[in-house]
Length: 202
Image (cartoon, rainbow, N blue to C red; front, side):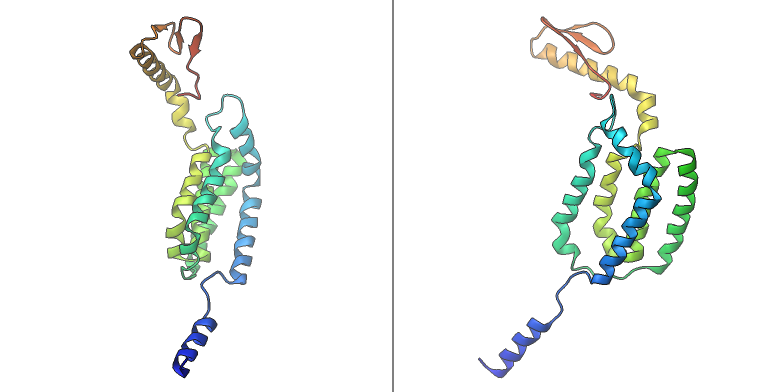
């Protein structure tokens, strides 16, 4: 092996590998601890919304896991991104925390849900910069599916959507030759049982 080849191999071996410095991991851990403390009452309430009776968000418990899997799937590309935090991102962080104080005092769950997403994005921008925010935008945004963001819409339109679901189920059963019979806006009678199209099904 020539001297030039040996020198090149040593340079490659000694070159820094892409990754996140330990100090940044410390900042991330501190930021997540602050997030947990800030939204503790909201996070403590979420399980009751996910596992309660007749909830619209029974899927909510798996949403954070799915978001984590998205990050894990993209990690090899994410860890190569440069970490260039944006200092002025502290301004939206401060504004979000100020609004959060009011939202907690009034138990505004929908507003709290939006604030969690916004704070995660602003915090990512502050700690790691624009490229990391772009890379984590999908998993952060995906968390919204587990939060009560659509409560007002659901409460307003549930009955209409339930009727549509019942009508669609009735037509499918009729097309399959099952001879269904509509009993009311949410029930379809079959030969041996009655199918009730519940709110969660809609």
